Image (cartoon, rainbow, N blue to C red; front, side, top):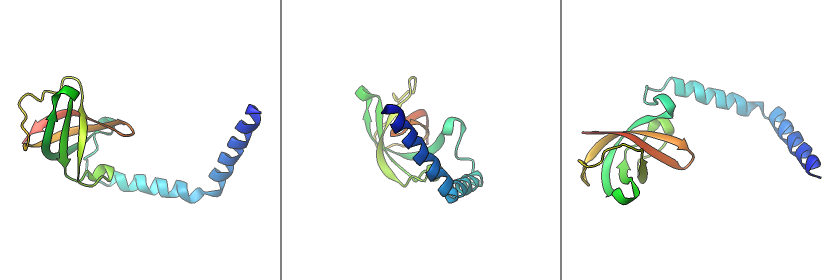
Length: 119
């Protein structure tokens, strides 16, 4: 039974792949467009972002920031909580302070600040 379900799944996947070549073309065109974008995306899919600190949550190792749009990730401006990578020093930061920061997205739904550059 399990092998039958696996075969059905593989068959459906193969059929969908063969019938939708336009998806692959659109995906490649998107990557070509991203290559032409300014060098905002760094190694490890990191970006440099800017925003204002709304809240410092030291006990949870987080900052709540209202950030500007992050064009490299197609992300609009919004207020978000960001986890801090080990070793990121927040001792000199204040709520209301404008900062630049390096941001990574190591897994879906998690955003990690790896470096802070005060402005």
